[in-house]
Length: 277
Image 1: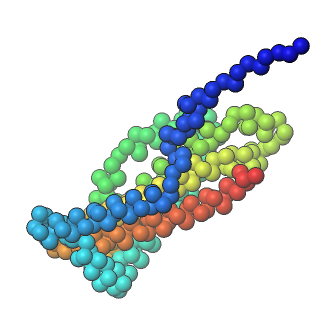
Image 2 (image 1 turned 60 degrees about the horizontal axis):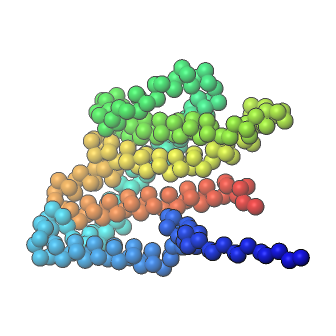
Image 3 (image 1 turned 90 degrees about the vertical axis):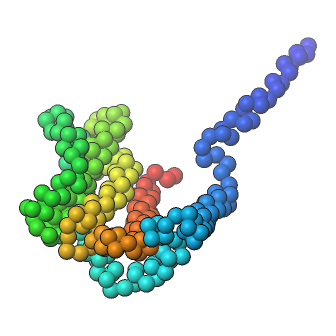
């Protein structure tokens, strides 16, 4: 006795193309890099052409060739290095202080429902205050010193990291926390072995963001009032219409931010090696 097999179902065309339209699927890296290069080169050529033909005022908008000459002349100079050193020191101090204090505060709020109920509602209102509006107050209190720049940047970094760490702790899998308590992990072991490893991706994303904000806070404070730093250089060259040098300084800041973001990415990969099989 033979039984007929049902005909094989025809392959659904939708199944063949399923996932083809999702972001990040089958992306050609050479195509992406080529498209990026074309966009950058096209923008620079358009900018240079517009400046040379008078479509835009070169005294106000500069031109790529002038920016390049300004980078070659200004960035290696002693004046540029002194400004970068002053700003870098303030950014480093404010980032370390703000990150450490904000992370500890966020972990405490995330682990303690009582503290979170008391102090949590104050985070959003205080963080909503524009920091640049506080710059004159900090300058009046601390004078034209690095302390005023650091306090302004810390006031930005602290609240971002506090909210970030609190959210990271509260997003840890509840079942994982229950199992850890069942096997007898105490608070310190629970924090080190469960909470922190699970919160690393969220907290590293916050650290990358806060470094940029620390840099912005310090530069903004220097632009308001300071005795040196990159912010003062931007104000000086802007007021004298040396726009190409201003763009050269902005390129310098972008390079610093990109390098630091790359270093944080490497650190995150190292900390998350335990996730790899």
